[in-house]
Image (cartoon, rainbow, N blue to C red; front, side):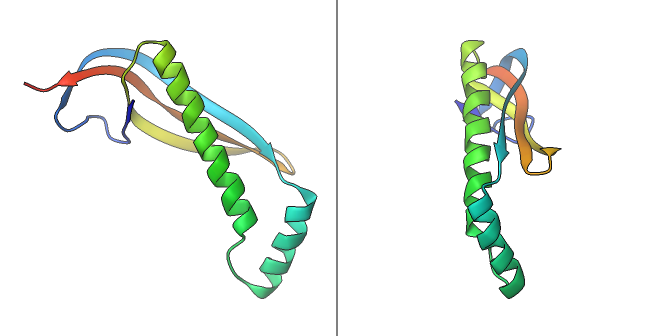
Length: 107
């Protein structure tokens, strides 16, 4: 599966547009990670626990989007974007979305 943030893929031509696909996950923070984050906030530095949590969330959202595109018969997704929104005080949604297409090698 080809995934691109642009509206086209070099060396390929779009032969069919299937439509929008998406994948999301909602993750809650862990109290233990919040305590570590509090200390990092006081002393400075990257909060690796949150970096890892958000990275895993983005990967899971992408995987779910790709799965949906594959089920629909796509071999590429263009115009891919991410969106984040808060659901409640300690939970956030990561959404990946794009346009599922079928591409072929350009002549």
